[in-house]
Length: 140
Image (cartoon, rainbow, N blue to C red):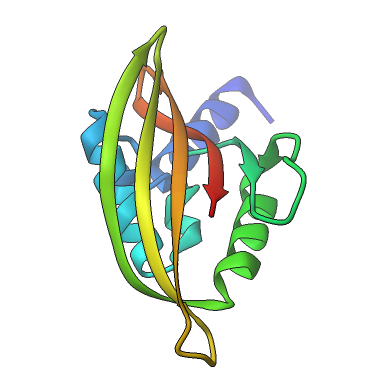
């Protein structure tokens, strides 16, 4: 393939990334994450993330994984629950092009009436296109 063909392919691929995945502000990233997790749309959550560090309850932290693996792990984790409420508790820049979002998650364990609360921490880095998710930690 010629350089021109590769350039065209790269440009077309960049159009495939959803515009909502390129967040100009951390509060916008926080709201998009809340919306994605409320509907358990993990693909939307990781759409702009080439590699993501995951830490889920009951599992050791992962090395950074790609989008497909992150989606599969998160989908398997959330499959056992029904979302009741999800709220943004904080969205803060912590300097050096890094930021975090804290979400409070209330959910029902599938097949039961048992309600649980969790905290979801999302780590972001600022890139030229906006804030990009690099870490997901769920505790509680």
